[in-house]
Image (cartoon, rainbow, N blue to C red; front, side):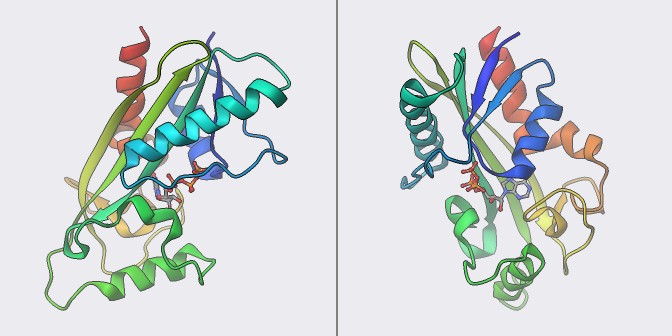
Length: 195
Ligand code: ITT
């Protein structure tokens, strides 16, 4: 079984990785470890930056050996907002703590009559303990709901309706999200690269 350090503090991502990659054994990014910088302009840059930062810290402080490090940079890209919040998704509306209110603010930013097309994007960086990194990605097309709907999932899930469905990721059961999500597709690509 591959033992992988998951370089993330996002509880929603952690839950999804344990469901999407049940055959991986995850070491979690400890509370006492530093925030991992993500200063890049693209998802790929940030995913690599997080994975490299985590490996450097773990080398000196990690309590157990791991086979590699996995980092995820992801976000919601809205056509009518020129692809935003995109790479800045985690930093959108920092004055609001609840996603229900962040989601409402994002919906209120759409210009009157604008198209509602959007996609979730996920880039995973995998860094073997010794050796070079690679990245894989996945995305899912869809549209923005008119209001926050459903309480499942996390983050922007309650305002995103995947193409071919009429319920948001906040309303759809997790197994449907996992059959088509950006993160599920990136995990499938990761698995293919690793085998
Ligand atoms: P880590 O860097 O610790 O992994 P983060 O939340 O800062 O956590 P990102 O910088 O990748 O992670 O930000 C991604 C944001 O995009 C995340 O905070 C959510 O708001 C949103 N997001 C990503 N995937 C999502 C999903 O599957 N469902 C809903 N929102 C998602």
